[in-house]
Length: 376
Ligand SMILES: [Zn+2]
Image 1: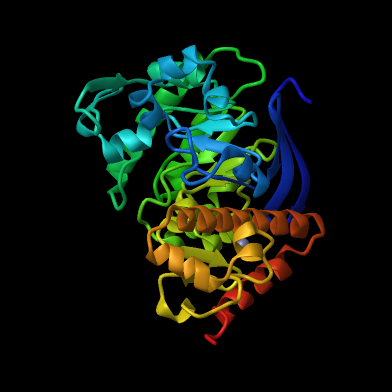
Image 2: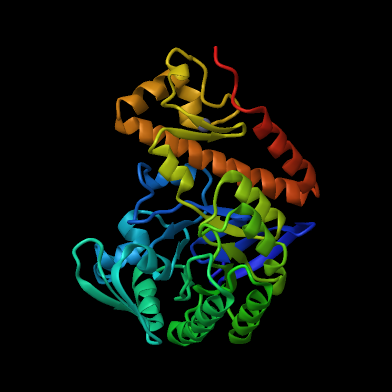
């Protein structure tokens, strides 16, 4: 196992890429989907079950963990991997996005962001330096720069000002991160939906130098067309020999479209969150298990899926436990959804390696266009 962080690009097919990230805690096959373990747990899943779906890496949320149970407590207990019983790689976000979306009484300055906790109202300040300290205490393998992301739509002047602040914070993050062999720091490109600003941001980050680069500031309500519009050019501004991470994406068709455009890593709460609301994602689109049409249906959610929910349970059972608010309903559907997402990534990795990504994409859309199997 590698003692250093590195990225090897194995195949390309058009703009799509497949490869592997090596870390001292194991390898991450790319394109990779990272399940979200917000509060040191992927909700409704045991860590060994998450691994069984095929996940190589999890995402942890700095904002949530710093407030509860606190980074210092997790550090004293041996770090986040030991604390949550996940020994493989972990990426942590910087806290910036959730400070802006969840905390109250925020005050943004050049120094950082002051805010009140959404849990108990306690006062906190996160700066690039504090974000690096928190992520070091957690023991994160891939650390994200502290950045600011303006809500879209916003005018160019607002987006430019915010992006330039994030670039100054990226430099401070790099300096505060220091030299930590085996750990990586990723820079985050900002610039909204404006090509010139995206290019300026990429140049600023490359000048500082990072082990990987994220495309930030997307999936914040701009819509898929605008997001793909940015992804048509933005990944090309980044170094080809470093991993590229699209933060907070997405639905299966967003993921396929992002990989097609040169993205290597993604994360989203969608498969786990929708698993707790009775929604299953399959090759044929999404299925609402709450719907009465499943009440007497002995067939699996997806006959082609190898997950426990599909191998061992009927749609009728899933419908029953979802409607009865039984915990196993959340467990089974979360497992299925994460399994489906990892199957999708594996399918894309194989297609890129075989030079048939276009065929894979056409088949992906054709199956979804068919819709769910007909009711009995
Ligand atoms: Zn399944």
